[in-house]
Amino acid sequence: MKIILSLLLVVCFLNAQIVVVTNKNSQLNSIPKEIIQYIYLAKIDKIDKLKIEPVLSDDKNLHNEFCNHILCKSESQYNSYWARLVFTGRKSISKRLNWQELVKKLQNPNTIAYINRKDLRDEWKIIYEEN
Amino acid sequence: MKKIKKIIRNIVFRYHALSILKKFLLAPLFGLIFVLPFYIFIFLNMLEMKQSVNSVNNELMPLQEISFNNILLLEKIVNEMNSAVSAKEVEWIDDSNKNADKIRENLNRYIESSYKREIKESLTAFNNYYRTVKEVSARIVLNGQCYTNIENDTKVLVQNYNEIDGLFKSLKLKIKNDIEKNFNSLYCNTNFILFNGNFIFSIWFFISTLIIFLVYRDIRYKINKIVEDSKEIARGDVDFEKRLCIVSYDELGQIVKSINMFINKLHKNHEELSDAKKELDALYITDRLTNVYNRVKIDEIIDTELKKKKRYDHICSVILIDVDYFKLVNDTYGHLVGDSILKEFATLLKESVRDTDYVGRWGGEEFIIVCPQTDQSGAFSLAEHLRNKIEEFYFTTAGKKTASFGIATCTDSDDAQSIIDNADKALYRAKGGGRNQVVCYN
Image (tube, rainbow over all chains, first blue to last red; front, side, top):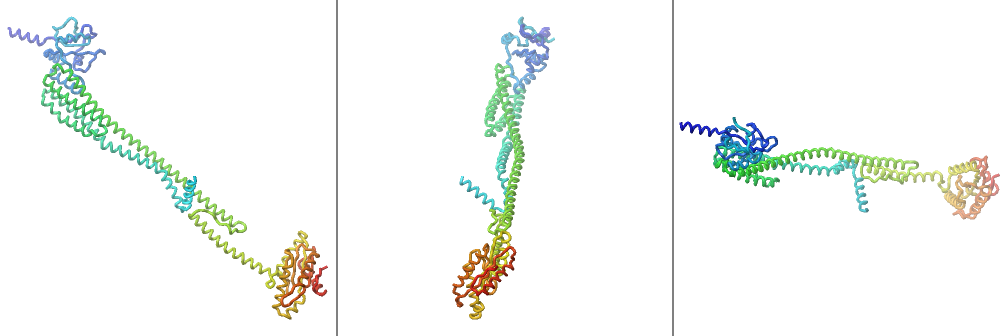
């Protein structure tokens, strides 16, 4: 029973729902998944002429989840992709932020970040949520 | 100024000394001389073209090749780094060293070319980039993508990569542009030379034609001059003192020389002939013994005087003179003494008459004097004067002699025959009247 519970817990934990959020004051509302992929793979950096700054979390699990579910890529794929961008001189790799930094960063209205749904705060709003 | 004149004279002299063929050959020669500067110009142009071709062949083409090569090598390095990072193998990073060495070698080989600055810049930028890429790759392989300084590192790397990429590409572009420029200049030069070739031909043609025309004019002028001068010499009484005068040493000059020689010969012959003619003329009208006019000339003179009488009413008189007792002299002293007396008598007459009178021997011991514009009394006083002179003269061997005079003055009805007859009649009367006297006819 304990094992089942702990498994459930693990599954629950592993499947912790990821949401993409931004500041509440942002003009951004809902963004489709493709656009989020484009932004995090540096294919676009603007939505409706608004410069978007994507923020990465230093939480490896969260990052892996994000890669797997939202970007639909394995982590190594993601890393290779970004390495290629760097070596071909297109885009530098952003620093991964810890929670405090992330919270601070999200005070900017045009910053977006992926977080666990349970970490959602009042001053943020969800712009993408996986069903 | 004087010097210039001298030079021009010298040139004209040299021109005249040329044969006609050489004169005509002056045309292409001068054409060439005028065209020569253009040829030199074109030659210099060709040299420039050659230089630009050489520069393309020796420098630009290999440079372009290595610049392409460098871009490919850079791509290879990027790929190798990428795969090393993706595979997380630190050892793979050093695999690209050989490519980097190749790039450095390529750049160093042409460091002394005309792209020295760009190549040096590229070399520095490449070294910078390669160092960075190696460091950053190693760090990413070791730490993954979540170490703290990754943003800065990758930013620098991206910057360096873009710099070296830009430099390589700009070098390639520059070389390409220079090659294009060279080819364009070749094209321009070729066009220029073609255009100038036409121009040169035109100038050559124009100058040759002009000079041929001038030489033709000169020769025509000389021929005309020869013709005119010849006509001038031959006009009316031939004037052998004149000569053709053309300063020229060509074929025309030879013609002139020949003609002048011919004229010289003619002149000489003409002078000889004239002298002979004068002599003959003198012989024809002169009495051989006494050196006074003979009957032929006297008849002519009388005719002329009668015509003058008719035309101008100029009176004239004729005096017939006969040496008294001349036959006696011949018989006594011989014909030789007679002849000498006749000579002395004629000389005496010639010396004593007026300048306008004509003395002639009429035959045997008879002499005749034609006195133009002299009436009977004039003729009479002249005859008296002569009679006295003769009377006083002492002839060689024969001593004193006298002569009888018969005078006839012409009238409108007279002719040559009648006036002589009249004078003869008067002379006859003078003989009959006792000799050594003057008798007028009428």
